[in-house]
Length: 586
Image (cartoon, rainbow, N blue to C red; front, side, top):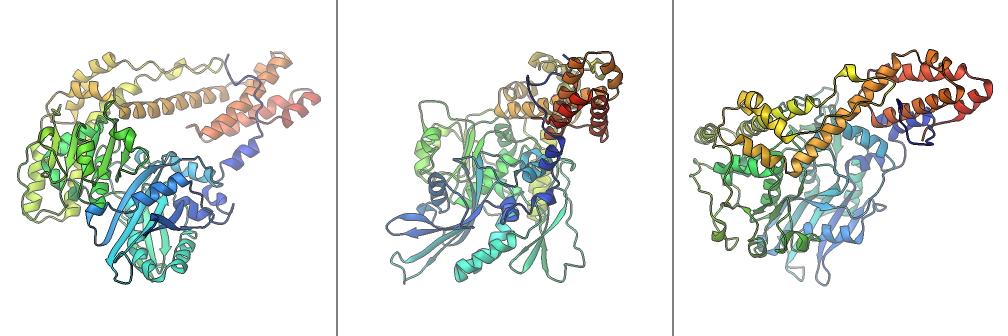
């Protein structure tokens, strides 16, 4: 049947569908704190109690909901392990599972904004990020001899650079002024504009204005949009953030400088990797750098920038009864050197310092050599890379160190290298998957949209001889082996699922456009009233579905289809007109 729709489904009124997808600005007056909720779930203060240990002392705004399990996770993840010896101020980030589903009053707006984000920045409904500013200083007036406290921002957004900048600005003052100051901070955030991708946003926070731009899925990968200053607000102290989400890539990869390409392969293939570091800031930065190195591909497995023995997934991730899961863990506790010894790939980093001299060549170390966290920095694995090492990038970065090139410039070079490597790898897959799309001429308005052809591994492999990565990359090696391994990975599954959904929606859109070009009134006059009513209901349902799923259609298609529906209804007897005009879509 041409217009298959759920049996007995009743199209709900189009007006309500439009109300649900209101423009971002119109969702904002729903409830107090909605603007705040678009950026943060809540702000927590975690302190140390001699009897209770780590405890959440304050949650703001007070109505914010956190389950006991979530509070426990936040408590343990907000403090460095005691062996880290982090005196002074430390910043890091963690990620933890959300233990209950919550629907925000402004979900319509957030879902809409999410659609325009690059795939790697889309929020994951199952996880929260925690951004931490931890202070530990000697204080003789306290029984323990130390003041220990963390200010933590809990958010769904992976905007690490933005939130670390916010904390750097507010945390030192909070530790002096306490709760009233926190209230003022949250009030400022509640005046921020929504996080709309592609716009330059002015975000006021305690006397300064941060100027940021959130990337969009339409940005050319690898380009950075410079945030421009404008005169009217620049009378206040403004800081322009070059990025909201990127970490200092070169600094993070410095300790494992010679193995960047192998690490790229391990992340691409979704291999289990553990990063052992001296402190949570080094572990979290390195894990986030690893996850970002396959951008614009989305890393689809779990990753924990900072993971502790108290984590609810500790048993699941450290068991020896099954193979380690596809996950990247950042750890600092020496206990993990024993419990994760069976993991196939261990990245050991010392204290991250930018090299003043050219790093020395470091061999890949055998896993049996890793006994404790005191082991030398390096990569401990028996993995044999599929691709030959690119000596050019190593030379280029070494030259940068000799010439004292700024770390930012080194990071740009490294990011471009990873981007070109990932694009060389993914373009042949993109090209093959595009060929699975049925021809436009096969789309008939009176039949269901045609199905995508099945993905065939062997057919794809045959395309590589003439249209493989050799067209864009000079790297030699076993590309075929790398592709075979990748096709079994969670990253391929996630990528292909997204592509298939996009292509299916495109077919639906083309099908609706084909319907719009038909004379539907003429069709209805040749068919029975029952068939005409059935057509109207199915068209209404299609229209609602297109609106809800934001199908990629020409701008006037929806209006045309609505006009077709109205014209057909007006040609029917009055009693049927009344019924059909009252019938909405489900």
